[in-house]
Length: 137
Image (tube, rainbow, N blue to C red; front, side, top):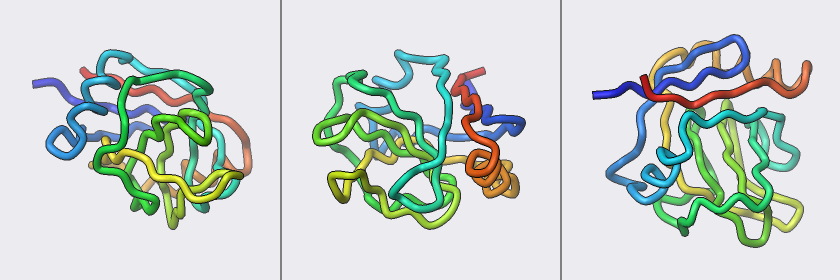
């Protein structure tokens, strides 16, 4: 059995896929792994970082979607009224864009290293974009 790892800036987090709740999103994301991007701080949503993905199409629609991910939850917005994106909450989040409230598919949950999550989020806020990598080992 493989292990999901999220390397974000200088931090490493263990994580799990939400395979029972978002099977299509998990399957689509797995095809893109290892997945690398830059995390930047959210503009409208609160305490979170996001990876803007433009018109990248994972070929999924809504499943297990929420506008209020909890700290350590990762959601995929499949696109539509705003660009495709991945968001990682490190504090209170009300997921939105300049178009208004959005909902994304909760498909990954961080399971360790959560004591560093706020530090990572504030690093992105004050120091700018940080590399992020999702991989199964």
